[in-house]
Image 1 (cartoon, rainbow, N blue to C red):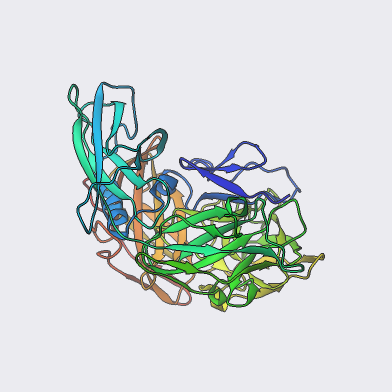
Image 2: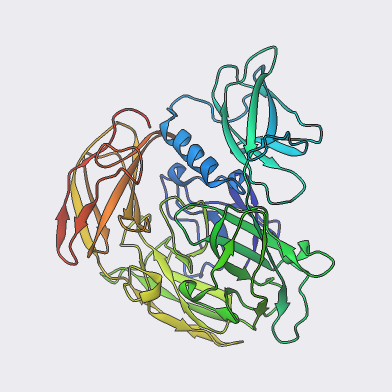
Amino acid sequence: MKRTAVLAAGLAIAVTGAAALAAPAAADPAPPAATGTAATAKRLAPALPGPAGAADPTARGLSSAALARYARWSAERPRAGTPTGTVGGAGALAVSARDARTGAPVARFCATVAGDEGSRACTSDGVVALRGLAVGVPLPIVVRPDGGGSRLGDFVAATPRAGEPAAVTARFGAGGTIRAKMTDGRTGAILDDRSYLWVRTVGPDRSWAFVEAEERDAEGWVHTDALPPGTYRILAGADPRYDLGDQWVGPDGGTGREHLAAQITVREGEETTAPTVRFDPGGTVRGTVHLADGTPLVGGAISNESLRYNDYLVWYYYTDAAGHYESPALGPYDWSFRIGASWTRTPGADQWGGGAREERDAATVRIEAGAEVERDFTLAPGVVLGGAVTGPAGTERHDLIADAADGLVAGVFFTNAEATYAHPVLGGRSVKVQASTVEGVEIRSRGWHDNADSYAAAAPIAVPATGTATADLRFPAAPR
């Protein structure tokens, strides 16, 4: 049974009311699954597992500059022993907001301690008071316009104080929105259900939006929250109660290939009309995923989306204890499948079907309406990248490997913070490596090789197409 999902404070919640679904815990990457039973619950969950990939949906609708400040703040702030949310203290903040272009005060907005949706407070008179915060602890505050429109939210780092609230001002930049109609492709009827649009940026930032058909207006349009100017694609999901299938929204109908989806340009102060979503009857694909040595891939993540090192959320299915997967309710198109194998108990190289590095080169699976198709995958072995590691101590280390050219994830690996590493990745490219050192459930430090504090500043490592590769990794000793 496929499940759509709604967003809440770092978790994906099944709309059926089932338990919260999130990425598996760092210490035990494989999810629970009954032996021999295919995992069929589709999850909108943190794109990367463990604390290093904890999703924060409160960050949606921020300007690109605000997202960059948020990422920089998260990377540079020491984590060990530092509270990251409201902790019942006597501290307070007084949050106001202004239009970034005109400087005019904004009356309606909401403020939230990032990652703590329960702290959310809204106002219509220009000031939000956040109370019950830890005194003297720097906190990440997300401030977003209330009531729709094209203004973008902001991120501010603020330190609460006792007594008179500390004043902080957010500035709302200019974004744009996307509108679309979701229809039954057989009849043209406009849908008013739990079908959804998952709007993803084509560019390197992590902007996204999520909107359901039941949020439509009187004319049948659904409207996204404000998005930063840029180019986007839409993955549309059909309500699981019916026989329609998911699709990437193409220029004139659905497709199962991300790179063939329509590219939608968002401009400041404008609403862009997306191609009409015409859902077609769906079908199902199921099968087994094997590692290169023939053993089943347990706890692998099967998806139809590209994954960048800084992505927040992604839709996927897990393989179960026998390596089985099942993807129901896919539109009748040629589909490509990304297989995340690196964060499992028996890591393999992340790849697209057919051993491809990129979605456009993947082997595809043809889905037919109302039919079930079997498709097994055997993963290409990849190249083992290994060497020594110098960096901060911790109980665990999460190594994220990303393509040096476009930031696409090549693998995410869990270790016990050993002094050496050996990770399988698809070769024939240069990569960059990030390490997140974890103590318990807290990120103690995070940095990139070679002693860099960002992806842009990281040193690339050449990985040959075959064989092995050696690179001694050096990560910043100080928390970043």
